[in-house]
Amino acid sequence: MILAFKLIVTPLFIGSVTLAGRRWGPVVRGLLMGLPLTSGPVSLFLAIQYGGKFAGQAAVGSLVGEASVCVFCLAYSFSARKCSWPVSAFIAISAFLAATFLWNRFTWLLLPAFAVLLLIIWLVARLIPLNPRLPKVANPPSWDLPARMIIAALFVLLLTTFANALGPQLSGLLSPFPVFGVVLACFTHSQQGAQAASNLQHGVVLGSLSFASFFLVVGLCLTRWGMAWTYPTASLAAILVGSLLYFITRSAGQ
Image (cartoon, rainbow, N blue to C red; front, side, top):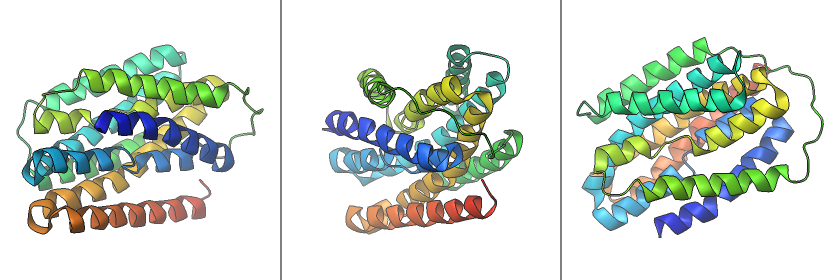
């Protein structure tokens, strides 16, 4: 059921954030990618299938896994300055996997994981160069949007096939794997250039604050409140943080 959900939602999400990015720019597209629109429902399914304790432990892993996403964003942004999009994607994915391997050598608790993620978000957001005032680009070809959606769906299928029976922490660490980040970064890089790709990664890093708020609530409340109260509350927290980030970036001209 989780796999079917991912295969349905993934192309729809890719299409939505692509159209939003064309309307409002790469930074807003990155902010939307930070919302847990797939990892949140997957967390719910884990709670239904394996219980609240398992899903709560996976939420801790997801927080640390999102730190690996920030490492991915930083690696892509830096490599895009001198490398083509395939090389940049390879370097960034390698950085994500290396960070995941490092995090998995430790046993994480919720609040330390949350604190580490906030620190990495702050640091990486300062390091990624941002230039929101880029010139308009020509309209992409008609095959562009369907290609993005198909590639993303196939990528999720491949990842999910090899992500079984990993346990709660490693499952959580791998669940934020930047499927959308890889696809959209490569298309943005190839069509709009390295700076647009860097803007996208900057938005993803800021959007990680929404992700962090969602899984903090899940980790704190799931075993106490149950699913019926925890997931709506976590979703509301993510939406509020995402909305605040959107208005802040709009006010700053980003």
